[in-house]
Amino acid sequence: MTEKDADIIVVGGGLAGLAAAVSTARAGYSVIHLAPNAPSDRRTSALMMPSVNFLVSSGLIEEPAEHGHPLTAIRIIDATNRLIRAPETLFDAREAGLPAFGWNFANARLLERFQAAAPSNGLITRYESVTAYCREDGIGVVTLSDGSTVGAPLVVGADGKKSLIRAQARIAAREHNFEEAALVCDLELSRSIGSTSIELHYPHGPFTLVPAGGKRANLVWIDEGKVLRDAQASGPEALLSTFQQKSQNLFGALKLASPSVVFPLSVLSVAQAGSGGTVLVGESAHAFPPIGAQGLNLGLRDVADLVASLAAADKTALDWPDQVSADYSDRRAGDLARTGTVVDALFRSLLAEMLPTQMMRAGGLWALKLLPPLRRQAFSLGMGKRSA
Image (cartoon, rainbow, N blue to C red; front, top):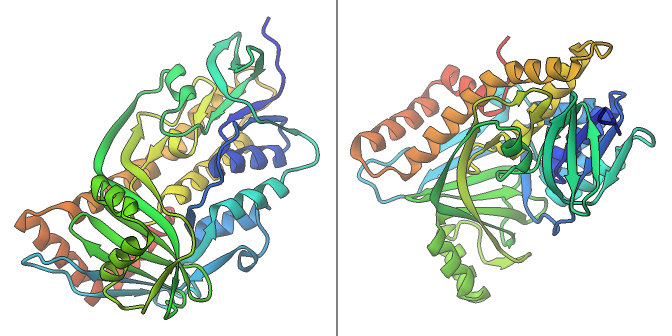
């Protein structure tokens, strides 16, 4: 009979995987976290208030102000030369009765904080790669790069878009790769953007500046992959000149505060987020372009629902891992479908050159600008609030 080394194995060393490992261990389960070594993550994550509240309530962070910077407004500027342009639109958190929509965090700093929140007992972290996964006698058996194996009744795949856990659990996924990519880096501005996120929308995606404290901002520029790689290869001075033009000189002279990195963009969705003692969290289950700040927010909602499914399961039953994976899949289905549809449609509308689509997008932003009830609904969806 296959031996059990822990209650749960979490595969994946990113923020969603670490949050899952720490949260399930804090819930009283014995956990093995398999996290292969990876370079430091220079990106940032804009987490909406429901995600921030989950991090605080679960003990993953304490005061948000100790780790990030508030986001109190979102300013959208149509910078295209299209025949029909959308109006400039400002979303202010005060309209939703909130001091902030959320907080912007450096991923590397969040990772450190999650590690510090790990319980002293019940969680073992091994910095090793995984080469195979199968299930034997109700146990998920994970093979490591040195040929050894570890086993647990429940296995959590948090190993990214190319998830080995998802593939070997035979959970179907759909993926579409875009020609567009994202360039990210940190900038020093001459004029602070305060706590307002600025999105300048261009034909191949937005040029977004997210507050990072003081006069610093995190840049996320989406454009055709070749355009971004050519800009990156042109050297620091030419790259800054491009940034200056893209920012429409609204923030004075710019300086690079970090190296730039280019990431390919794709969308990925799964038929079900859990099955037969396997569950998927983070980009193993879903991936979107960085539009609407849904990436890690959705991953943290995965973790919250995983913890809820574990709390609802009867751990004395032999089939408790199947209970958990089935319940988790049911809990995640609506959120994943709704968010995936909205984010994919929004991203494709930004790229569309067809006149009817331009009219619909411009009309939609006019409606959001002029109708407070509709704007509040957009706030709720964008922040990932659940239906009652």
